[in-house]
Image (cartoon, rainbow, N blue to C red):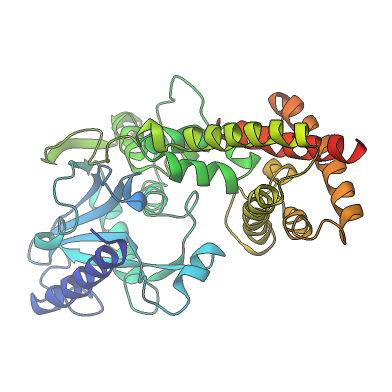
Length: 404
C-alpha cells in the first residue's frame, strides 16, 4: 500500500474512532459519568507485532482501559498527520507532533490486520488503575493530546512504559534483566534486517551514540521488548512480591516475526551496489593510469552523490533535535566538501589546484579512516567500506596521474 495512502487511512480511522466513541456515550472530553465513576477498571498493555511498512517494522504499543458502563478504549500514542503543513520537514528536524488518541475496541485492529496482537492485563490496584485512567483521559483532551515525538526516547512504546511506572510508583517495580547487553543500532539492525536500504540509511545518518550500551529500560523503545520486560517484571505490595502482569492473552495469532517483507535480494542490496561501484571505479582507474588522464564524468558523478549525502548529514547534525546524530564519524568520508570536487572535476584546467588539494587531503583522511575504523566508537555498515575504497582509489589515482 502506498505510504501516503496508508498514513491517511490510519489518520481517518482514528478520527472516525474518536467520533464513534462520542456517539457511544463517551463524552468528547472523556469525562466519567457519576454512574460509572466507581465501577472496576482494568488496564492492559497491548502489543502489535511488526507490520510490513518501513515505519511499522518495530511494532506498536497501546494501553487498553476497560470499565463496565464506560466503554473499552485503546489509547494510541502513535498517531500522526502526514498531511499537516511541513510534517516531513518537522519530522526530519525532530519537531514532529504525535497524538494520543482513544480508539474504541471495535476499531482497535483497523490498519493492523494480520499482525500478532498480545494483551497483558496489569496487576494494578483500583487506585492505581484509576490513576492511569484519569491520566489518559486528561492526556487525550484536545489541548493535551500532542507530544514531541522522538524515535528512541519518546514514542508509542516509551509513553505507556512511563505511565505504568507512574501508576505503580507506590510499589517497588523490578524488571528482569536481559542476559546480554545491546545497543540501539544492534536492536534496529535486528528488526530491520530485511530492509537493507533502510538500515543503510540509518547507519549513514545516525552516529556513535547509537552504539553505546543500553540499560534495560532504554531498550523498551521497541514494543516487543517492553512486552517481554513486563512479563518478567515484579512489584512489591504490602511486603509481598507479585508479578506485574496478572494475565496474558494472544488476541490475534500470527507470526512472531510480524508481517515484514522478504529480505532485499542480494543483487540489489547496498553491498552489491557498493561493490559494483568499486568494480567500475577499478576498471576505469586502470584505464586512466595507462592513458594518464582522469575520467571526469566518473569523479563528478561519484563525488556529487557523496557531497549531497554529506549535506544531508551535516544538516541533520546541525539542525535536527533527534537523538544520536552527533558525533557521526561518517562525515570523515561523506561530507559537503565533496561537492567542490564534483564541480571542479568538470573544469579541471581552471580548478586544478583545488582538485589537487582536495584529493590530497581526501586520500589521507580516508586512508586513515579505513585503517582506524575498527578502533572508532561507531559501527559501520559493511557497504560503507567499498565506497570508502572507491573514494580513496579515485583520489590516489588523480594524484599519481597529475605527478606523471
